[in-house]
Figure (cartoon, rainbow, N blue to C red):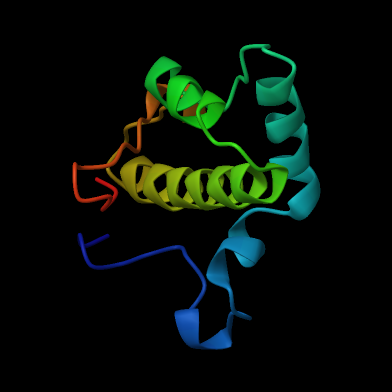
Length: 102
């Protein structure tokens, strides 16, 4: 397998927004409820739990969680192709000062 091969579906066939295709709403809801209850959500790193705790509105929290879970799933699939297997909580997707995720 070359580094350019992928097991992900072709983006052209996915419905938008893409995060819905890679993160079902009930997944984001479960993580958001854990964050709201002050519990350690297994899918988030400690830094992400801190960032999620600062979000004020439930809708913004759920959108943020869904985007994080989708990005972690995509990155996890890509890393698995190289033989590296990480749990979602071991992948941190943070934001730069200008708000762009990295």
